[in-house]
Image (cartoon, rainbow, N blue to C red):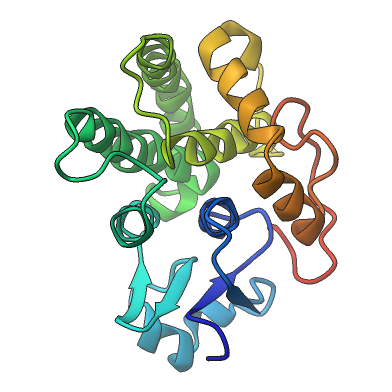
Length: 228
């Protein structure tokens, strides 16, 4: 690698969260497009980096890392500025909301977006209906937490901004009336903060996200690759 980090990415995928973190800390990195149209994430070379075949992978001097929350936590501990340090009193709050975001909110969104991976054709509608009843409860918890003075911020904010962006856009074959960012004022303010950052502007240029990628999202028009 020419730089310390190589990000294997697809436009407007979970790799966007890692790009935002790298940009926020002004860390030098290279990108390698993972072509989703040809299922490049399933080939042997990519599976050698991430045996689960999911995007992203971040290659580092310590070896390849995968899982969005794990990469964020590693970067936070290695470079600081993306979350409270291990000895900071706010560390516990950061960790609990980071893993709630990853293990609960993001996991439920994956099922909403790709129900066929989790249920047979006869059950996908029921799965999505259950998820659209559950997801607003997750968002209400996060909105209440983000409104409190002890909100840890850091890498949580771009991670949540990306998830909220995708809720407004996907799935394109399903009624998205269950979600409106305006119902969650603290999360809406969070999206505005992230959007105004230099990191977000750089990521938006790189992945074709438009001028308001989090407050008024539109489908990506990336210079390379595809978001779906």
